[in-house]
Image 1 (cartoon, rainbow, N blue to C red):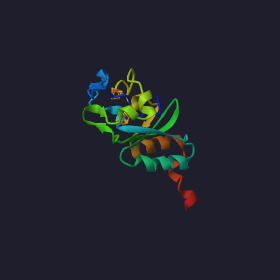
Image 2: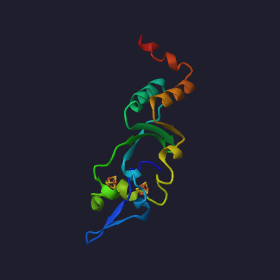
Image 3: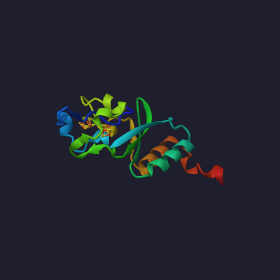
Image 4: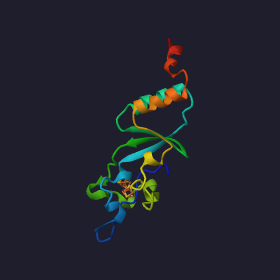
Length: 144
Ligand code: SF4
Ligand code: SF4
């Protein structure tokens, strides 16, 4: 699954009571509401990967590839997520939140587990680049 950001966490009933999805109530970290995925063009050249190295060097930025392509996986908490996993704008939450299904979600399988490639650090991505490009270490020579 991709472009998933969040899910139906709660159902705000007319009486004002909050009914929390049973499965979500066990998901103490509200996993799907504390990150966003952003699709990116598939990196091909050394320059492309060098740019990704810069991005993954920042806190909360990860990069992954799955059957749908390449994505930034950005760890960032939604401003509408309230205590207890409650969505503060449940009635008007965005489509991506409405469409996300808790039947099989990130609680069952993390993005990292579901990905073909997953890079959480500069070191891990650099290791991959060295394998992918024979002359990776000489990529700056064109600028000298
Ligand atoms: S990751 Fe799954 S269980 Fe956790 S809040 Fe999202 S939909 Fe619910
Ligand atoms: S809007 Fe609500 S459901 Fe969507 S990510 Fe934020 S807290 Fe979660």
